[in-house]
Image 1 (cartoon, rainbow, N blue to C red):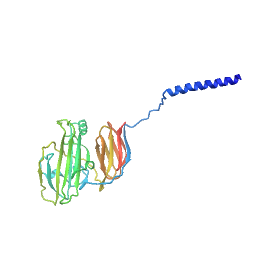
Image 2: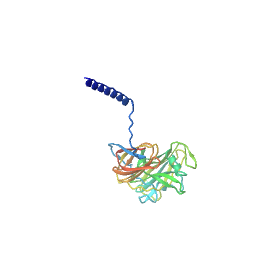
Image 3: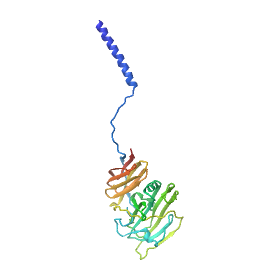
Length: 306
């Protein structure tokens, strides 16, 4: 009998101690220690693929290429070649100009600064413009860094337009908008628009190209010459590539595949228009980090810093 009482006592004691241990365990937080794992400083995450209807290219042939000796196209005339030599074109002015319908016509625009650091800061407050007949084609043009004749760092956009049709008039706009006060290292600029407008009239070739203009407002800045190589896109239709830039800074994105593209992406959501297909990409951002991989037209990708 004593043995049975002793066993009951031990059972009771074990239950009491067990309850105390359970209360302490429940009242105390559990600490898990995981070994540190290295994480990349710059990450691109594909989120989903959208279905889309391909958007036609510009109403004329568009080749992303800045005019100059490295442009892969031959026999390219700058739109400025059709104006009197030495004539300074003005932003905010509509220029009506006749061009030979069979020619390749180049359009380019740039912004320069006293140093690369100043240029990078300026670009955060600048929005480039390129449109045809009121439609935005900025995502289809070439872009990139170069230096001007004085050796100053610059950033340019540009395209060559071709396959004109006689009797079809087109309005081409190229330039930029300054969103906030900036200084290029030489002078201060307030928020303004510096966009050049050309009303293009394709005609049969004439010995001397002519140009007329109708002033609409005062100029703000003159565009700059540029040279930057980009291959001709072998596609008749463009497809969207959706980019969410959550790095809180600019991202340089280079694509190589069906053709090559270079984009300078501001923070936020971007829709880029590219030839359909798959591309190898290299992206740089987050203070100098870079990442590479693959992406295809129709996909959405997110860039962010860690």
